[in-house]
Amino acid sequence: MTATQAERGCPFCKKPSEGKDAENFILARLKHTFVVLNIYPYNNGHLMVVPYRHVAWLSQLNDEELSELMYATRLCEEALSALLNPDGFNIGLNLGRAAGAGIEQHLHIHIVPRWAGDTNFMPVIANTKVIPELLEQTYAKLRPWFEQKGF
Image 1 (cartoon, rainbow, N blue to C red):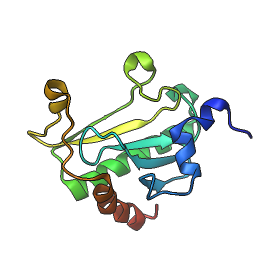
Image 2 (image 1 turned 90 degrees about the vertical axis):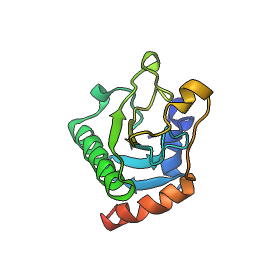
Image 3 (image 1 turned 180 degrees about the vertical axis):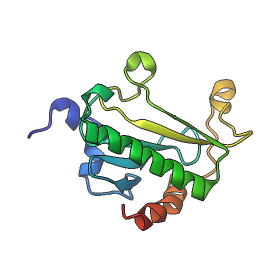
């Protein structure tokens, strides 16, 4: 099957096919989905679960893909809880441009760890993001957990 123009330009289609998981911050590969650090994080440890298949809507996923999407989301919650000890999470999808999807043609679930008193208000009042840890450091913390689980 040849990739469409949209798929060729899609970072969620391109990055897994490059075989550069550490460079692309891919933490885990499952059969239908992969887990990746968001390179524009809202908070430390901001992960995304992405299906390999280029679809925009949950209704376009088959039952196995949908099930694995939620299974991988639960894995992310477990990993972040074990390693970063957050006080809570924001977990969600933005489907369609009107809902705020940055990459609207390829759905993905955001898993954002939250801490009481975190600095997530900074983009609102100062147009600034405060991320006290480099992506490479977060990747180095999380990758061994996923490896230990067999991913």
